[in-house]
Image (cartoon, rainbow, N blue to C red; front, side, top):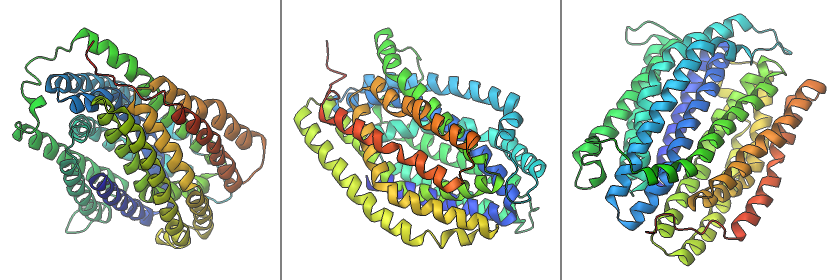
Length: 443
């Protein structure tokens, strides 16, 4: 857990600084970048979801000490990533401007929507270049984590975020003789950082073949046994669609929030960026549950898996209670770092405080999700996560946004409190132990 947590903390802390730097240029640039990042988030989650399905088998093959099995899941990840890259590059190049425009609405403050659209377009055109190195890095880094190597992805991530931070400072503001490129500079810095991180992870993996035996001859043949392909597709498809539809659902929710004006977009962007820093414990615990419980299931130690899972969920909630308290205390001060209006800062502070109060609930929901996923219950997690968003959360947000005059804060509270129902469902599903399954036992 510790390496994953450290990497997430550093990554999201630098992302916060990145966001603050762009925010220094103005509210419109910050909003344009926030909208594009919301769209790119859908691609990121598509890659995560697609690779996670194969990753379920990777973890259990690792618990079984089966290098050939891991090699085959690695090859499947390559196919999944290539498919995702092709689809999303086409979508962003063809419909990028239209997608950005969906988030642009007049609000209570006078802001330049055309300028925001232009900033978003400029940022997206450059950010398309980071899609390939990001996907390649995820193929390697996810496999490394699933086979017990968490330090290298952490180190690569740390290097990347500091590269990103340095080039942000130089290129956004025009330091050390470089031109001041604003949002384009921020995008270039991100692209450079993605390539650096990708090179570190890929080169290290191939140079340590004795430790990563699955990489030996990984590309000598891209053939994957048909039986495994079928099993991975069965498990991956719900996860892939879950992550795509869930992240798209988050984009739709933010589009509903944007109906309250560009200031709502900016405030939600601040809330999201800051919250991601405090969510590091939540995400790290989810990864920990997935790896530890999955490996125990693959090794056939089912009762120990159940016991460890129970302890991990309890610790995850406790950890996020502590983190939530710290977040609530700091919520009035962090928005002051941004060069934006007092009204946006005030809304962001309120959103952050609400998020802090709900953090333990988010943690329990997240731990239940990864518990179910570790045993391959991907259809259940699809219903638990994605279907809930589209059937419950989005209709509620849409009605509030389009048919009421309710302000952004109560709308945000109502939509997020719907997740208490997911916690109740998650508790029942985990308690019934339907997820206690060894997926890689030989027939």
